[in-house]
Amino acid sequence: MQPASPAQPATPGAGADVKTFVTAVLLTFGVGLLMMDGWALLDSGFGAFLGLVGGGFGVFWWRHIHGKVFPRELSTKSVVILAVINIALALLLFLVAG
Image (cartoon, rainbow, N blue to C red; front, top):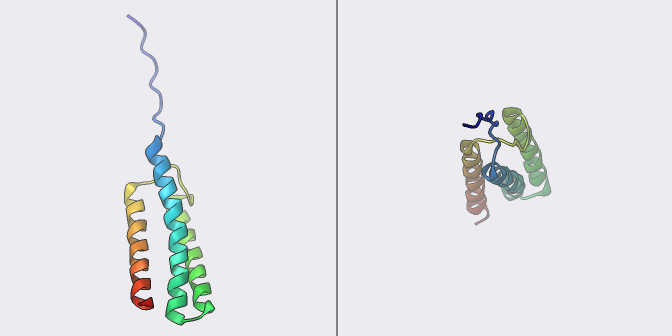
């Protein structure tokens, strides 16, 4: 009989990397959507600037909630909520610009 080896701590796998990558894409895309929404709503570069400021506050809020902008371990719920917010921003842009 062999002696039992000590338990190794669980390490995040490829799923964590995928969620981090998707989060990076969605945050970047979301800030761009906010800028385009601001431009479309105010019909000026000032609207895009306000969208950029809003996106900066959004990223700051995300970091405050999760501890990092791109945390290693992120819940699927957070990524899904971020995706829904991006879809809502894209729909707003589609409705305003159309």
